[in-house]
Amino acid sequence: MTQDADELHARHQAVLPSWLSLSYEHPLELTRGEGRYVWDGEGNRYLDFFGGILTTMTAHALPEVTSAVAEQAARIVHSSTLYLSRPMVELAERIAALSGIPDARVFFTTSGTEANDAALLLATTYRRSNQVLAMRNSYHGRSFSTVGVTGNQSWSPTSLSPLQTLYVHGGVRSRGPYADLGDAEYIAACVADLEDMLQQTAGGVAALIAEPVQGVGGFTAPPDGLYAAFREVLAREGILWISDEVQTGWGRTGDHFWGWQAHAGNGPPDLLTFAKGIGNGMAIGGVVARAEVMNCLPANSISTFGGSPITMAAGLANLNHVLEHDLQGNARRVGGLLIERLRAVAAGLDVVREVRGRGLMIGVELVRPGTDERSPEAASLALEAARERGLLVGKGGQGGNALRIGPPLTLTVAEAEEGAELLADALRWVRGRLVGG
Image (cartoon, rainbow, N blue to C red; front, top):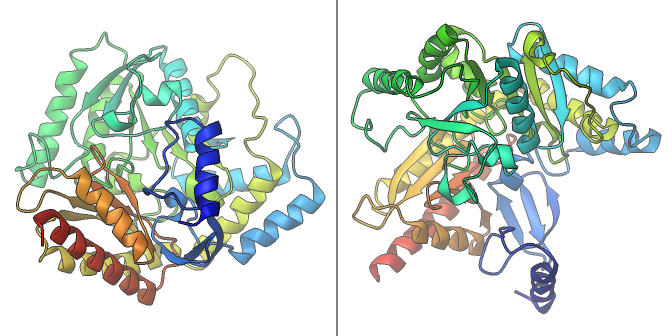
């Protein structure tokens, strides 16, 4: 780390909150990106397997997006939702049609946190209840309401909440009381837990909010069909289903455009939230809901920055690129190859408990070698070792024991193989460090 980087870190610490997390013992300043690579302030190049937390979804400096932003900025940057906006209407039309939700309406925000906050506002208003069901090991944002439905201790700074939240089983397939069951039995047990949980409420629960693949939780997921089975129970009670697609949307899982489509047996969700990747780095989030739910608010509202002309132009250009180049298909093909490579590496390393995920959304859970004990230490060491070798990955899971891999969806086969080899070398080093080799 150079003197300039040390100085910038010291300035960061002097004026920003202590809880504003930074990766790495010596934090990194990224100054430039192109394709799947980024450069730091010292000129070092890295293969980016995290994309700013799955936000640079398509590629760094994607020409279509940068051109759209520049052209819109030359016309008008901001107007607010008090005025008609052609880019906002056009992107809303595209997203409503793709969502799978009938008679859909779209409200744009600036982040996934704000999108989930808006979805909770809509659901609790529509149902006239502040009772919400959420999944264990979940993460839905950093606002007061979304922290209140986050089932991950590492990201829950307060127990205070405007909501009464009850947590159900199902988001983590390979751990917990039902881990040893087959998929059908696992789903049945989770449904029984849900039904029992509903008996503990005051009645009239507003919604279940769930990530089809838990992002911050370490890219864990239930068996396909779990939320369809939940949906049958919820529908009997009139309870809404909010599918948090902030990390799973736009084809990242490869098999589906939306994560909820792995659980489509009983229809689409009532509300769908999105953010991150749609803007390829620009600040876009939003909620999709059927008109009856979206229009339930009895007061006026606006969004100062949600749906701004410049971000909507970026979203339209990025979505067109994703669809025209079949990046969902690329995520399925290249992601499948990457998972195979990483599982082959893990087979010989007892520091790796599991390689899981689908498409270009892959988790590597680390443990103390020779045990089943979660090891945040191993994950921290692996994060640093990967960086030293020129690879950026993320971290998550309970206590931070899982590596999170979410490269841009344009990742090539050669880049996938390069990244797998770099990570394999880092994991071998970590294993040796932990056992004293």
